[in-house]
Length: 148
Image (cartoon, rainbow, N blue to C red; front, side, top):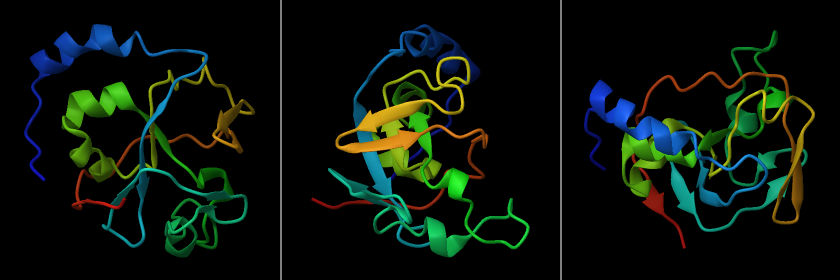
């Protein structure tokens, strides 16, 4: 995987495309499973479980620094990122998993467009947007591998 620096000029030039993200529905462009800290597996499909989130992901095991007891935060089982944003920042899909998110969707993810309580249909699963903010990633790090 090769990530290169994106300049302010490149980001500025890419902004008009970001504003074209659909507001009502859009495709899932990539699913990423994080089986352990730093590990990423790019998936073509996944199973969502109400108790554990994305099956095979380490969300529940890793816990959270945002809960009092360090346990996994049930309001942060899944994280989504706009696919247009990650494409602008990381380029090729093989680099997207470095962001740490699990779902990359072509959909406007703003609080105004998807307030807490909004339900989204993902295949046969229904997920609910929570009030817990997803404020970004700590780093764009670990490599990824494609699982078919």
